[in-house]
Amino acid sequence: MLAAAPALAQETPAVAQARADAEALVARQALIEDLGGMGAVDQATRVTFLKVRKTASPEDRQALDAIWKQHYEPIDIKHTERLKGLLAGRGWFTPEEVGQRAADGAFHIVNHSPDLAFQKEALAKMEPLVAQGRAPSGYPNLYDRVAEQEGRPQRYATQRARCVDGRHAMPENVEDPAGLEKRRAGLGLQTMPDYLKGLDAMYGRCDPPKG
Image 1 (cartoon, one colour):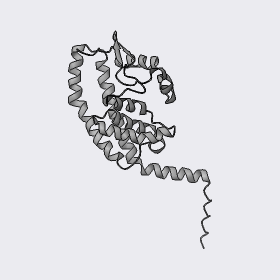
Image 2 (tube, one colour):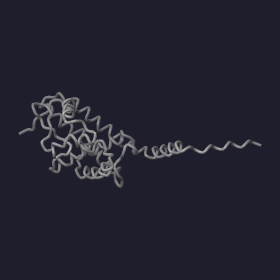
Image 3 (cartoon, one colour):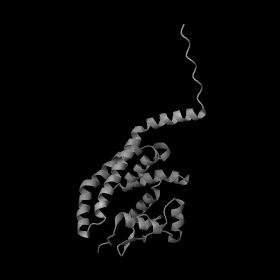
Image 4 (cartoon, rainbow, N blue to C red):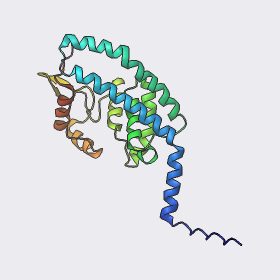
């Protein structure tokens, strides 16, 4: 007679948890690939575009903006519609659920969306995480973007920096400027001077508003 196979040892709690995590991750594979893939395209378009625009003349920048509208703006619209479907009926995507890269991808898509109503919906889904001390990395940017579109002061000074002598400067429409650095630090943002230096490095010379 064949000897009976030895009984499998009972899994330790650590192994059981690892197995459950693996099964859950595999079940979310398509979602992670969708978010990460769209996020990668979103960032690639901007890196490609800004590389040229950074040192372009004001005249060339106008032509480049037309190229953006023709080739890249439709991608933002397409990504918006795709993300709406993925977000329907659920909360905001967290790094614990989909990984940091996919979570960042979801933020980039909604942050660059042309749909204000959808941005407000996403912001509302982020708020419970903020209350728990788990604010998504892009929450301050989205908050300010929505506030500015609605004619309200920014809270974290992440949008539409002023242009002073070709360099980026702090926006004017900021609520409680004296408390700005504390609010930024509370969400892990750079100090304003460091942030503005980063804008200069990323975008090059800024253009003052026309007219």
